Amino acid sequence: MRALIRFGKQPRLRFISHLDLQRFFQRAVNRTGLPVAWSQGFNPHPVMSFGSALALGWTSEYEVIDIKLSAPMGRKRTEDAVRAALPEDLPVYEVRMVDDKHAAPMALVRMSDYVVRLEGENAPAVLEQIPVFLQMEVVTTVKKTKSGEKEINARPLVVEMEPLEEGCFKTRLMLTESQSIKPEMLVGLLADLAGVEAPRTHVHRLALLGLGPQGDPLPLMTL
Image (cartoon, rainbow, N blue to C red; front, side):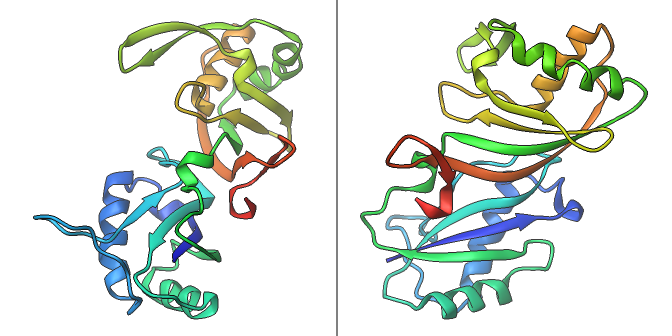
């Protein structure tokens, strides 16, 4: 049995790295009293994985951790135990119990929703470029990869984008191993279109999404 846990990362912890977060969760699950499964070998550790790493400086309301259990447990008891072991800056929003055959969350992620807040005098000019960007078919940029820099068309990586209240916009971006773009890169492209320097950004993740049976995007915890 496995527990899929959706949690958030509040502003006070936004500069905690993903590696430090992994280490913290390894210690936290030991305090839950749950029958957590441990890896074999010289350096045993709790068997767990994350849906997608959250970049340093971002906040979120939709992080997913997959924890393997060595014995069946009820959802409510699991949720209460995990919530008690985590600080209020890592709130637990929902828990789902699945069997071991269920696909790993990281294998299901295809897209992510974000709210991006812009700061500075250039923010209005950048936001004005959203409809211009959406009408384009090709937006060429250079992306750094493990094998070096690569020229890509960023337009297909931006699934949706719309302005919100002053200084903010919402966007849905591709998030796979071969197709992905970060909100900061998108802001840079909008700034290039506007002919201004990219403003400072604050990124908040709203959801991780996979594909449902009909190919439609669905929240990861529902798949």
